[in-house]
Length: 360
Image 1 (tube, helix red, strand yellow):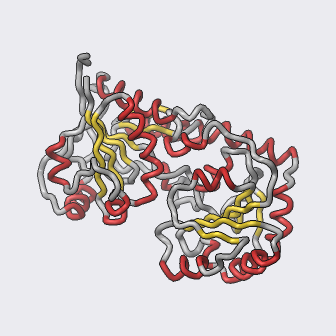
Image 2 (cartoon, rainbow, N blue to C red):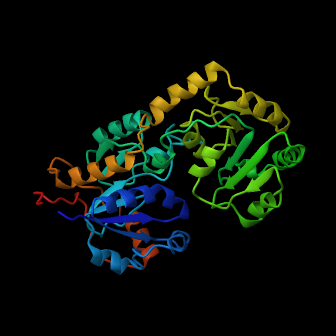
Image 3 (cartoon, helix red, strand yellow):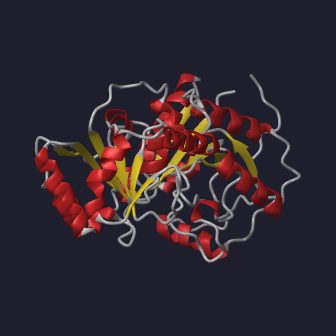
């Protein structure tokens, strides 16, 4: 059977997540289309020829499987709605329930393709509680290009990454800015920097102005090549931390919400230089803590998570799902999606889409 896949995004940062999925789909000879519900994501798709330009085209395409790197997805289009996630659980800050937004169930998805034991275990609990979706651990497509990990000679390259929330972001901190500016003139370290696409332009321009022979700003959402180039990372609470750690390379964290033992923690700009030296010469204990963290976060190092996602979605598409409850009415959220897309319809698929019998 030739399946029809839809990759549904909102922001440009979803492309590195979904590109490996597109490659896997095409390698199997299936159809795949892209759609973005926001201008940022749509602009990022300008080099692709398989983009659906409006929601009417999406509805008419009638996908069998929708791979979603957003928090929401239209309930009125066909297909299994599979959440593939736009990041790891960064543990930026707990909600009032002492959980994280990563685990918020919004009532739109039929399938959650989880990244590893630390997320699967909680989503399995939620699966049992709600009984209107399925959870399958697959690993995360975005990190497929990171593998196999290639060992590089020890160097002095520091990758700087930041989240967009002002209260949590090192990019807004003037003391950090001045210290990195100073260190970039000493030649002790080489800096490469990337900022979250949601950060305001004046912050981006400020850091970009530091460009010199020891500091290079990269305006990209494709971070894997930078991960491979760097020896250590300097970051705040961004989920790029988790991605980078998969290489077993140390991370210096600035004002992280939690004192994790797999990170080197700093709270003052004056601590950065010595922390960078510690990271470049990590202790055996630190590396062991990182390895234990990886085992729980994302134990897959074969670069085949995208293949597992596609296998899981096709299998679930054909599975008997009559045991699942109907999804909640979600009237307010459904109205917001319709308003965003300027497409109003009473149609709503509140039970998982199913193709009962597979035909070759």
